Length: 221
Length: 388
Image (tube, rainbow over all chains, first blue to last red; front, top):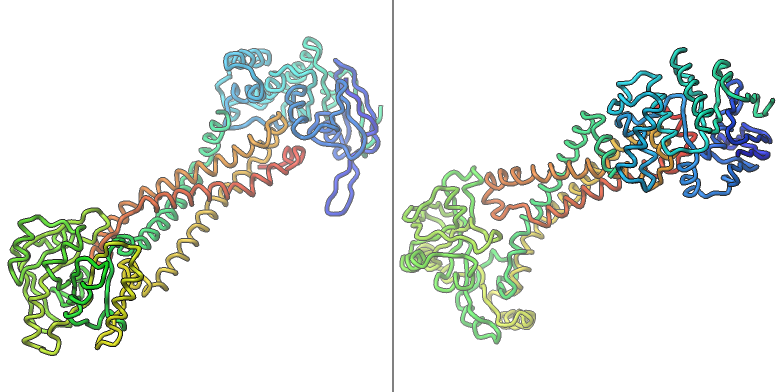
């Protein structure tokens, strides 16, 4: 499903090159639940961004389901992301002026679905995360755990094959974190979603099938 | 539809900032519209000029008189139709310190003047009464309203250019054919003026301020002007003949420094509108970097982001511009009432409304330009790290 081939990534601050990832190779089979762990600055989020197609490597390739996404132009890459990837962020990243329903509906606005079909999809996604009764609530009216569940509903509403989660429990209390991890586990086991998750939390990583460690831009077993 | 909905929701996120920005734009647009109205009013005489009328005046300045005898000679020039003449009277009405007591007073050839100026609409009875009485005068509707003048009222004037105490009886009130006609003038018999001045200062007898005449073919105006000026070239008063528009333009040109300054101020105001708007839009776009990054992550395209930022900017510009224009009308109305005689034709023209709307619209677009480019160039990963 996911093949990261000899990927390196550097950032430039003025003329100074800052290497973040060095010659990373990684294969993630379909249906896998992978946890990427490592200290701050190790390059976990950068690797996740490369897999999700929201950043580009300095060298190497990222092939997802046979498509080398590093060769796609910005327009095609945006379209690819919309069709294939669901995103879950540490700070939920919901639009505060939209209700839970409208936030979940966002990715569907880029599809050709009718308004009725969109409504059905959104209701299904929100029911799946247990928030069918919170559809008209704004993010400020929800708890952190509920916000993250809305974000998960947004991530799955287009039924993508790949979910990427960047510290999904990093901003949550223990109970909410457990609920979110149970939900991700269910999405992986019941709905066969491939999940790549960045986390600091060993308890969260326990839910994953595999954990890989990054340190100073290098990947370890 | 989604973009429009989100634009509206975003615009209302900081209501105070939104209201203050709209008010800032509105005040600037009001100032812009008002200044443009002053500029238009200043050249209202030029715009209202007839295309078939010409003026012959003294070659040195229109304050120097021409002999009455020129009238018949001008009439003989081929292409010249009916000839009339007028004379600036001056005089003081009531308290000279009150600018409203200053209004144009002309001694005119009553038999011909109103035929040359068909835009002055005078009822037939008024016209007959005006022509029949030597000390009669007519006044414009606006002037009559301003000084509460009725038919039969006396207008006493203290002479300055023409000394003595003068009294005129209002025998008619004219109105303009359209709003561009000056309704603040007072017209009376030149013969009345000439008779009295002949007694007081015989040397000024038969003096005329300027001649006005119609031409049968406007394309012949240059030839006619040359023919008249050549005819009087070696006379005691050489002449300058020009179109009515050029004649009016010469008055406007006297104030060119003021007009240029007003033009410059109006351009500065456009800059202020842009800065007020740009400040808000830059702040908004900066605060929402992470949200735009999320939208880009989800697959939203550059035109969606452009629509969100540009739409919000245009929304503020349209509301601010609309409010500003709405305020321009009562402000101009109040100004025209206070300075009715200084600006006889003072109204917000359609061109001014169109220009102010265009300025607000273009400022709306321009204000969004830089934040939009910056947001589109922003890397998603960088945007996701942004803190509001």
